[in-house]
Amino acid sequence: MTLYEQIMAVYPELTAEDFDYRFGTIGLSDDSDGLGAYISKWNYSKPIPDGLKLGK
Amino acid sequence: MAKQTFTTGQILTAAQMTSLQQTAMGGGSTTAKTASYTLVATDAGTVVQMNSASATTITVNTGLFAAGDTVQIQNVGSGVCTVTAGTATVSTSATLALKQYDAGSLYFNSTSAAIFFAVDAADGMANVLTTTGDTIYSSSGTTAARLGIGSTGQVLTVASGIPSWATPSSGGSSFVGVKCTQSTNQSITNATTTVLTWDGEDFDTDAFHSTSSNTGRITIPSGKAGYYRILGLVSSDGSATGTRYLMVYKNGTSVAESILTPSTIFPSNTVSTVLNLAVADYVELRYNQSSGSTQPAYTNGVYGTFTAQFLGA
Image 1 (cartoon, rainbow over the protein chains, first blue to last red):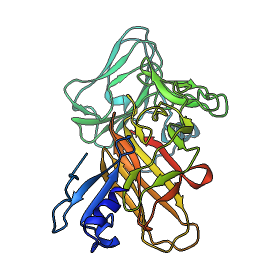
Image 2 (cartoon, rainbow over the protein chains, first blue to last red):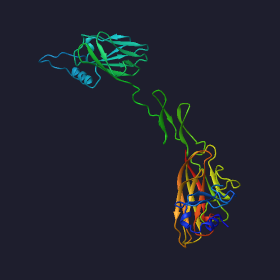
Image 3 (cartoon, rainbow over the protein chains, first blue to last red):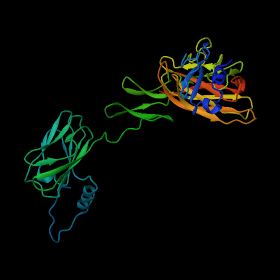
Image 4 (tube, chains in turn orange, brown):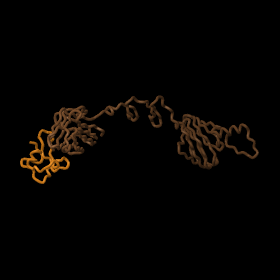
């Protein structure tokens, strides 16, 4: 399950616009360094889901 | 002839007329001198020609000449002849010291004041040019010298204080830059901004890129700080859903972005910018797609590129 899918499973009300690179409230990034994707921005009104964190 | 005072009814002789013509043309009666000399009233309208191997003077005193009188002074000797104010004043914007073959005209504004108009024999520059493309420069003071044309590709430079043609040591306009390549496409997770990686180079003049570590980066090596043109291209599968972003990041911060709302036709993003980069600065291409599912970013072959071109310091 991707990071995007994990978040959507908790907050199914989120839309593609919430994840938009420029205008979204949530940013996901992958630095291609082998460490996988991480949350790089969280401005959504609800908390980061359990088990996830901001940054690598 | 020397200045005359003519009287009414006087008839000029042929010799007088000839002498007057010569005087009017700047020649006329010439008095040769071989030693320092003080002008006298009868020198008015004549040429005083100094010829001495030693330094001499020609002295100008007051009360001898009328306003409008002239005396031509020439120096044909190797010794410098200097026009010297005695009791009269002598003004000039040039030198009063006449080298060999220099000359001048002493013009009296009044009985006590004269102006010296000098002609320097070196004022006219000798032509040293011999060949097409030759250039003139001063080799020492007012001495003109010839610089022959250089070879194709050479540039004008200065060596030991004089100009010369030289071949640029660094080869002049040699290209500096890198073009990164990728052998396979890269899988991009939906809505996840991902650093694009590159496993090869078409060219890399100065080890800007590594294929073994931080393969997404172009890093500025030592001695190559300056302005760079950055070019990025990436393509993706046709999908009318979401957007496609391609960004240039400098040291982890976005500095240029392109956005594409795709269609079902194979969409391509391009991004281009010019950056002032210091040594150890790095740039990356990052890609974001929101098609709703994982999609390939085609960075391989003709579909993708990551290029940096050095423009200058």
